[in-house]
Image (tube, rainbow, N blue to C red; front, side, top):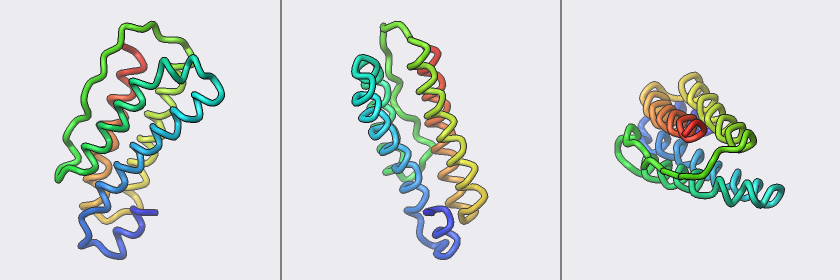
Length: 129
């Protein structure tokens, strides 16, 4: 939705940041849902997902969405369900990056895509750490 609006008003530079910020909110919502349905898994994933939300907030609020989110380190073992959830979140970011490129203004789409690709990469990396 934001990507389409950026075509109608291409002079508004805040759309790229808003698209990346929306991904940050997705991480918070995902953590809340996991906490509701699988509390132990939600607690295990909370540092990673909330760290990604903070990173998305920093990237979305910065002038250049290419700023990377902080790396989150955890000594906990991965469960297959945590890997699946993190990979699903990463693929969601990749899909949004594609939407931003296709439906957005050229500059906004590029900037949002870059920020979302960084988030997707960090999320996927956390799945295999």
